[in-house]
Image (cartoon, rainbow, N blue to C red; front, side, top):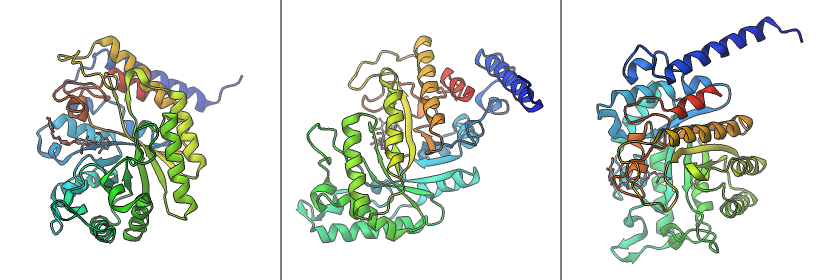
Length: 372
Ligand code: G3I
């Protein structure tokens, strides 16, 4: 078959970048330090520029942590950002009449300076929602009307503060129960407002910022039972004419439990319901769910990192196949040292779930992902 000049050129570029990647992976770069590597490393944001945004989450503490390698990676590798903690209710609105914008404002500035589109995280969640929202006085439950008014006020104020700068909001986070025979999770929101609290939250969010995209965000949605519950929830919203733009599949995977076929099916299921799909909190623990051992206190075994690279590559193949349905793939942390997996579910247990190691150096998983 006759090859066009463009094809030949493309083959050369691919071959050349393959050689560069191999050299880098083998540690043959003459440069030292993660920052210097930024000059030669491929960027996730560029590699996937025509497919979807590649995002990252971190908290304001990173900004003045002195971790220059992490900040360099954050600002060059990614073009989307989610504040990991600083927009959660307890942090941004700790008391009824006190808003604390400083930390989130600083993060917004960083994101804007580095051309990252921002996802607000999160408005309604069973965690990080202070008791005062649900009480008239300590131990005295507030009425449904009072709680709805407080939610309305919170959304109008916080979403209003960032209006025009936030691309979309995780409006409701993790409302689905993980218990087999329970639909919605037992949460203070469910108790205070009843089963239609998700609908109320989306309606109020739409009213507060009609220009922002609105998402439902949850984990383990690739597991069929939980996925079905989410389908029921979304369908109910849609049947009732509630505005919802997309769904966040968090993607907190564990090395031995990545099921790419179910991930693909989940993306297809929600896209078929008319939703945009985001992978909103991606990482891959070396530990299984419920595993509380501390097997790798001094570093991860090379064979596990190679397996992790394969699993990440397989996931990104699924993402690429479905790029028309996906807007954003966001990693939950810049590098392994900054992952919540080091303190949850087991405090101070080192884990290795991301693409960069603690020094900000690319891991095998990074090379697997940028290779495409
Ligand atoms: O207690 C830890 C301490 O052990 C640790 O050494 C230190 C490291 O900085 O942090 C300490 O405080 C924690 C804090 O965030 C740190 O940023 C809190 O205990 C902890 O409650 C809080 O954790 C956050 C958690 O949500 C709860 O808000 C995590 O950082 C954050 O990654 C996690 O993110 C959630 C998403 O919002 C929703 N989906 C699941 C995801 C992971 O749990």
